[in-house]
Image 1 (cartoon, rainbow, N blue to C red):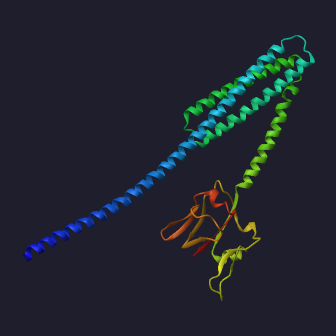
Image 2 (cartoon, rainbow, N blue to C red; image 1 turned 90 degrees about the horizontal axis):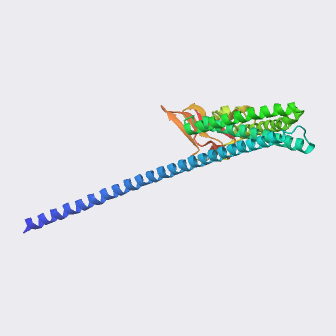
Image 3 (cartoon, rainbow, N blue to C red; image 1 turned 60 degrees about the vertical axis):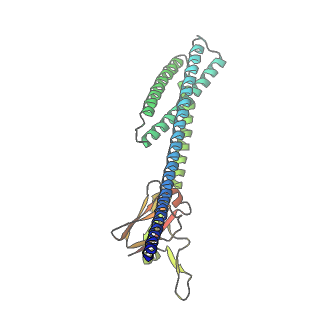
Length: 299
Protein backbone atom coordinates (compact mmCIF):
# COMPACT_ATOMS: atom_id res chain seq x y z
CA UNK A 1 0.00 0.00 0.00
CA UNK A 2 2.86 2.37 0.92
CA UNK A 3 4.56 1.44 -2.32
CA UNK A 4 1.43 2.41 -4.28
CA UNK A 5 1.21 5.77 -2.54
CA UNK A 6 4.89 6.44 -3.25
CA UNK A 7 4.39 5.64 -6.92
CA UNK A 8 1.40 7.97 -7.13
CA UNK A 9 3.36 10.74 -5.50
CA UNK A 10 6.24 10.27 -7.96
CA UNK A 11 3.87 10.46 -10.92
CA UNK A 12 2.30 13.59 -9.46
CA UNK A 13 5.71 15.23 -8.99
CA UNK A 14 6.75 14.34 -12.55
CA UNK A 15 3.46 15.72 -13.83
CA UNK A 16 3.99 19.00 -11.93
CA UNK A 17 7.57 19.25 -13.24
CA UNK A 18 6.31 18.73 -16.81
CA UNK A 19 3.72 21.48 -16.30
CA UNK A 20 6.37 23.86 -14.90
CA UNK A 21 8.71 23.12 -17.82
CA UNK A 22 5.84 23.70 -20.22
CA UNK A 23 4.98 27.03 -18.61
CA UNK A 24 8.64 28.14 -18.72
CA UNK A 25 9.02 27.08 -22.36
CA UNK A 26 5.80 28.88 -23.27
CA UNK A 27 6.97 32.03 -21.48
CA UNK A 28 10.31 31.92 -23.31
CA UNK A 29 8.57 31.31 -26.64
CA UNK A 30 6.12 34.15 -25.98
CA UNK A 31 8.93 36.59 -25.10
CA UNK A 32 10.98 35.67 -28.19
CA UNK A 33 7.85 35.85 -30.34
CA UNK A 34 7.09 39.36 -29.06
CA UNK A 35 10.72 40.39 -29.66
CA UNK A 36 10.59 39.01 -33.21
CA UNK A 37 7.27 40.78 -33.88
CA UNK A 38 8.74 44.07 -32.62
CA UNK A 39 11.75 43.69 -34.94
CA UNK A 40 9.47 42.88 -37.88
CA UNK A 41 7.24 45.88 -37.10
CA UNK A 42 10.29 48.19 -36.95
CA UNK A 43 11.50 46.83 -40.29
CA UNK A 44 8.03 47.32 -41.75
CA UNK A 45 7.93 50.97 -40.58
CA UNK A 46 11.44 51.58 -41.92
CA UNK A 47 10.53 50.02 -45.28
CA UNK A 48 7.31 52.05 -45.45
CA UNK A 49 9.25 55.26 -44.77
CA UNK A 50 11.76 54.43 -47.52
CA UNK A 51 8.99 53.65 -50.01
CA UNK A 52 7.19 56.90 -49.10
CA UNK A 53 10.42 58.87 -49.54
CA UNK A 54 11.12 57.17 -52.87
CA UNK A 55 7.58 57.86 -54.13
CA UNK A 56 7.92 61.51 -53.07
CA UNK A 57 11.19 61.87 -55.02
CA UNK A 58 9.70 60.15 -58.08
CA UNK A 59 6.64 62.42 -57.97
CA UNK A 60 8.94 65.44 -57.77
CA UNK A 61 10.88 64.22 -60.83
CA UNK A 62 7.68 63.64 -62.78
CA UNK A 63 6.46 67.15 -61.90
CA UNK A 64 9.79 68.67 -63.00
CA UNK A 65 9.73 66.69 -66.26
CA UNK A 66 6.21 67.96 -66.90
CA UNK A 67 7.20 71.58 -66.22
CA UNK A 68 10.23 71.39 -68.54
CA UNK A 69 8.19 69.80 -71.34
CA UNK A 70 5.43 72.38 -70.87
CA UNK A 71 8.02 75.18 -71.15
CA UNK A 72 9.48 73.61 -74.29
CA UNK A 73 6.01 73.41 -75.84
CA UNK A 74 5.38 77.07 -74.99
CA UNK A 75 8.74 78.04 -76.49
CA UNK A 76 7.87 76.19 -79.69
CA UNK A 77 4.48 77.93 -79.86
CA UNK A 78 6.00 81.37 -79.25
CA UNK A 79 8.69 80.68 -81.83
CA UNK A 80 6.00 79.89 -84.40
CA UNK A 81 4.12 83.10 -83.58
CA UNK A 82 7.30 85.20 -83.87
CA UNK A 83 8.18 83.59 -87.18
CA UNK A 84 4.73 84.42 -88.60
CA UNK A 85 4.79 87.96 -87.19
CA UNK A 86 8.27 88.68 -88.52
CA UNK A 87 7.43 87.51 -92.02
CA UNK A 88 6.00 90.96 -92.83
CA UNK A 89 8.26 93.25 -94.79
CA UNK A 90 7.40 96.16 -92.50
CA UNK A 91 6.78 95.97 -88.76
CA UNK A 92 4.31 98.10 -86.89
CA UNK A 93 5.39 99.34 -83.45
CA UNK A 94 2.89 97.00 -81.79
CA UNK A 95 4.26 94.00 -83.73
CA UNK A 96 7.81 94.90 -82.77
CA UNK A 97 6.87 95.26 -79.09
CA UNK A 98 5.01 91.94 -79.07
CA UNK A 99 7.94 90.14 -80.68
CA UNK A 100 10.36 91.62 -78.14
CA UNK A 101 8.08 90.56 -75.26
CA UNK A 102 7.79 87.04 -76.68
CA UNK A 103 11.59 86.80 -77.04
CA UNK A 104 12.04 87.94 -73.44
CA UNK A 105 9.51 85.35 -72.30
CA UNK A 106 11.28 82.62 -74.27
CA UNK A 107 14.58 83.66 -72.69
CA UNK A 108 13.05 83.31 -69.23
CA UNK A 109 11.61 79.84 -70.03
CA UNK A 110 14.97 78.65 -71.39
CA UNK A 111 16.67 79.83 -68.20
CA UNK A 112 14.06 78.10 -66.02
CA UNK A 113 14.60 74.85 -67.90
CA UNK A 114 18.38 75.09 -67.46
CA UNK A 115 17.91 75.42 -63.70
CA UNK A 116 15.47 72.53 -63.53
CA UNK A 117 17.74 70.23 -65.59
CA UNK A 118 20.72 71.21 -63.41
CA UNK A 119 18.65 70.26 -60.34
CA UNK A 120 17.73 66.90 -61.89
CA UNK A 121 21.39 66.21 -62.70
CA UNK A 122 22.31 67.03 -59.09
CA UNK A 123 19.68 64.58 -57.81
CA UNK A 124 20.93 61.93 -60.21
CA UNK A 125 24.50 62.45 -58.99
CA UNK A 126 23.32 62.20 -55.38
CA UNK A 127 21.60 58.88 -56.16
CA UNK A 128 24.90 57.50 -57.46
CA UNK A 129 23.82 57.66 -61.10
CA UNK A 130 22.08 54.28 -60.83
CA UNK A 131 18.64 55.41 -62.00
CA UNK A 132 18.91 54.67 -65.71
CA UNK A 133 15.40 55.85 -66.62
CA UNK A 134 16.10 59.25 -65.04
CA UNK A 135 19.40 59.56 -66.94
CA UNK A 136 17.69 58.75 -70.24
CA UNK A 137 14.91 61.29 -69.60
CA UNK A 138 17.39 64.02 -68.61
CA UNK A 139 19.46 63.32 -71.74
CA UNK A 140 16.32 63.64 -73.90
CA UNK A 141 15.36 66.93 -72.24
CA UNK A 142 18.88 68.31 -72.64
CA UNK A 143 18.77 67.43 -76.35
CA UNK A 144 15.40 69.20 -76.70
CA UNK A 145 16.79 72.22 -74.88
CA UNK A 146 19.83 72.44 -77.19
CA UNK A 147 17.57 72.21 -80.22
CA UNK A 148 15.32 74.99 -78.87
CA UNK A 149 18.31 77.20 -78.08
CA UNK A 150 19.68 76.66 -81.58
CA UNK A 151 16.34 77.51 -83.19
CA UNK A 152 15.90 80.62 -81.04
CA UNK A 153 19.46 81.70 -81.84
CA UNK A 154 18.69 81.41 -85.57
CA UNK A 155 15.46 83.32 -85.05
CA UNK A 156 17.29 86.12 -83.23
CA UNK A 157 19.77 86.34 -86.09
CA UNK A 158 16.88 86.65 -88.56
CA UNK A 159 15.29 89.38 -86.47
CA UNK A 160 18.60 91.21 -86.16
CA UNK A 161 18.84 91.22 -89.96
CA UNK A 162 15.47 92.98 -89.93
CA UNK A 163 16.79 95.85 -87.80
CA UNK A 164 15.99 94.42 -84.38
CA UNK A 165 18.66 95.33 -81.83
CA UNK A 166 20.16 92.04 -80.63
CA UNK A 167 20.88 93.70 -77.26
CA UNK A 168 17.13 94.19 -76.80
CA UNK A 169 16.52 90.55 -77.57
CA UNK A 170 18.95 89.42 -74.88
CA UNK A 171 18.35 92.17 -72.34
CA UNK A 172 15.79 90.27 -70.29
CA UNK A 173 17.97 87.14 -70.17
CA UNK A 174 21.01 89.10 -68.97
CA UNK A 175 19.05 90.92 -66.26
CA UNK A 176 17.47 87.67 -65.15
CA UNK A 177 20.83 85.89 -64.99
CA UNK A 178 22.29 88.66 -62.81
CA UNK A 179 19.31 88.38 -60.45
CA UNK A 180 19.52 84.58 -60.35
CA UNK A 181 23.28 84.67 -59.68
CA UNK A 182 22.75 87.15 -56.84
CA UNK A 183 20.01 85.02 -55.28
CA UNK A 184 22.09 81.85 -55.66
CA UNK A 185 25.03 83.55 -53.95
CA UNK A 186 22.73 84.61 -51.09
CA UNK A 187 21.38 81.06 -50.77
CA UNK A 188 24.90 79.60 -50.75
CA UNK A 189 26.02 82.07 -48.06
CA UNK A 190 22.93 81.49 -45.90
CA UNK A 191 23.20 77.72 -46.26
CA UNK A 192 26.89 77.80 -45.31
CA UNK A 193 26.03 79.92 -42.26
CA UNK A 194 23.22 77.55 -41.19
CA UNK A 195 25.54 74.54 -41.54
CA UNK A 196 28.30 76.04 -39.37
CA UNK A 197 29.09 74.34 -36.05
CA UNK A 198 32.02 74.24 -33.64
CA UNK A 199 33.62 71.57 -31.48
CA UNK A 200 36.42 71.43 -28.92
CA UNK A 201 37.84 68.56 -26.90
CA UNK A 202 40.42 68.05 -24.18
CA UNK A 203 40.88 67.29 -20.49
CA UNK A 204 39.20 69.60 -18.00
CA UNK A 205 42.55 71.32 -17.44
CA UNK A 206 43.03 71.87 -21.21
CA UNK A 207 39.47 73.12 -21.73
CA UNK A 208 39.78 75.47 -18.75
CA UNK A 209 43.06 76.85 -20.14
CA UNK A 210 41.21 77.64 -23.38
CA UNK A 211 38.65 79.63 -21.41
CA UNK A 212 35.78 77.25 -22.16
CA UNK A 213 34.75 75.54 -18.91
CA UNK A 214 34.57 76.03 -15.16
CA UNK A 215 33.42 74.06 -12.12
CA UNK A 216 30.55 75.40 -10.06
CA UNK A 217 28.05 74.35 -7.40
CA UNK A 218 28.69 71.50 -4.99
CA UNK A 219 29.30 71.64 -1.25
CA UNK A 220 32.70 72.20 0.39
CA UNK A 221 34.48 71.40 -2.83
CA UNK A 222 32.45 68.23 -3.49
CA UNK A 223 29.97 67.53 -6.28
CA UNK A 224 30.96 70.47 -8.41
CA UNK A 225 29.56 70.42 -11.94
CA UNK A 226 31.53 71.29 -15.08
CA UNK A 227 29.77 73.91 -17.17
CA UNK A 228 30.47 76.03 -20.22
CA UNK A 229 31.67 79.59 -19.62
CA UNK A 230 29.57 82.37 -21.16
CA UNK A 231 31.12 84.52 -23.90
CA UNK A 232 33.68 81.85 -24.77
CA UNK A 233 36.00 82.55 -27.73
CA UNK A 234 35.18 80.92 -31.10
CA UNK A 235 38.91 80.72 -31.76
CA UNK A 236 39.14 77.92 -29.17
CA UNK A 237 36.91 75.72 -31.35
CA UNK A 238 37.30 73.84 -34.62
CA UNK A 239 34.86 75.16 -37.25
CA UNK A 240 33.01 72.45 -39.23
CA UNK A 241 30.19 71.95 -41.72
CA UNK A 242 27.54 69.78 -40.03
CA UNK A 243 26.60 68.12 -43.34
CA UNK A 244 30.17 66.90 -43.82
CA UNK A 245 31.64 66.23 -40.34
CA UNK A 246 30.02 63.26 -38.59
CA UNK A 247 32.68 62.40 -35.98
CA UNK A 248 34.61 64.23 -33.24
CA UNK A 249 38.02 62.64 -32.50
CA UNK A 250 38.62 61.53 -28.91
CA UNK A 251 41.27 58.75 -28.46
CA UNK A 252 41.04 58.74 -24.66
CA UNK A 253 40.25 56.32 -21.85
CA UNK A 254 36.82 57.89 -21.48
CA UNK A 255 34.89 60.95 -22.63
CA UNK A 256 31.71 62.88 -21.93
CA UNK A 257 29.92 65.78 -23.55
CA UNK A 258 29.87 68.97 -21.49
CA UNK A 259 27.39 70.64 -23.85
CA UNK A 260 23.79 69.43 -24.11
CA UNK A 261 22.90 67.13 -27.00
CA UNK A 262 19.79 64.87 -27.24
CA UNK A 263 20.20 61.21 -26.33
CA UNK A 264 20.30 58.95 -29.35
CA UNK A 265 21.75 61.64 -31.61
CA UNK A 266 25.31 60.48 -30.93
CA UNK A 267 27.35 57.48 -29.77
CA UNK A 268 30.75 57.04 -28.14
CA UNK A 269 32.73 54.66 -30.37
CA UNK A 270 34.92 52.39 -28.22
CA UNK A 271 37.71 50.03 -29.27
CA UNK A 272 40.41 48.22 -27.30
CA UNK A 273 39.44 49.89 -24.04
CA UNK A 274 39.46 53.48 -25.32
CA UNK A 275 36.92 55.91 -26.75
CA UNK A 276 38.03 56.55 -30.33
CA UNK A 277 35.47 59.19 -31.27
CA UNK A 278 32.02 60.68 -30.84
CA UNK A 279 29.89 59.56 -33.79
CA UNK A 280 27.11 62.01 -34.70
CA UNK A 281 24.30 59.70 -35.79
CA UNK A 282 21.63 62.38 -36.32
CA UNK A 283 23.28 65.75 -37.16
CA UNK A 284 20.01 67.75 -37.23
CA UNK A 285 19.05 66.46 -33.79
CA UNK A 286 22.60 66.63 -32.35
CA UNK A 287 23.10 70.32 -33.26
CA UNK A 288 19.50 71.38 -32.57
CA UNK A 289 20.08 72.75 -29.05
CA UNK A 290 23.48 74.31 -29.69
CA UNK A 291 25.94 74.70 -32.56
CA UNK A 292 28.79 74.20 -30.06
CA UNK A 293 30.02 70.79 -28.80
CA UNK A 294 32.56 70.43 -25.99
CA UNK A 295 33.96 66.98 -25.14
CA UNK A 296 35.85 66.38 -21.87
CA UNK A 297 38.51 63.66 -22.13
CA UNK A 298 39.69 61.36 -19.35
CA UNK A 299 43.29 60.37 -20.06
